[in-house]
Image (cartoon, rainbow, N blue to C red; front, top):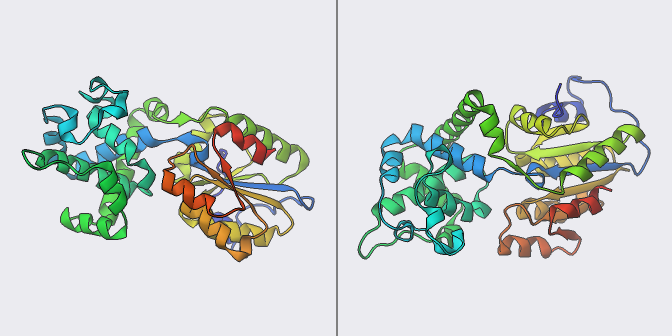
Length: 326
């Protein structure tokens, strides 16, 4: 077995009295640390998710992606800004990795703070492409600010209906595109992820201490399938001691872990302001130490949201993880 030993389903089954799927957890001294952190605290997967979304869009709407590649004119007319590329259009012209137009990749990077799922990523990509295709005299593409301000369940639902699709179909296309990429070029797929410098060393030290002292180890919250997360963590040579849990079920996972180990020194670190806020407001989790990782995909509004809870510690750089994990 790789570093991601158990899925969220296995974890819940074992904690709630379901069928035994593994040997009982070792006894740990009261106050032993238990770390729960999001995968985004360790790795930047924006490029991989954007290229995968482009591939998914190509399978769902091939005419649209083909037309987007043929667009001409300065990136500014398509919805890009010079500031995204150091004040020059050069970095926003042509195509980049995966055949993705550079201006489109740059715009999606600016929209990253509102992306909560693969569905969001694919829908926003199509919206940006459609806006660029429809631009002309007297009609400009929607700005990043306009999209971000209005993004939410209502707009997401409206776009799914407009595209004559379904959330399941779009999400499935994304999953298939990722699996195909991993099968065709696993090295290229891994290279599309960027590990946050300064975050891995303190995590390795925490894992080593848990192994030597019989601690509770580390839980990593990920929106990716367990096998995909395991591939990344194995490549980083993090070793054992990590259990993977579903990012969407973060609050439920935290409550379950706290109930199982009420005396553990439990630390929760996430780059999603809404998830950190939910934990801070949950009376069942008052004993947790909480931190918000700003180096992920934080926007000023999200940082302000997390800061509205005094008990949430602000981590500005990946190296700040050491203060929470040691």
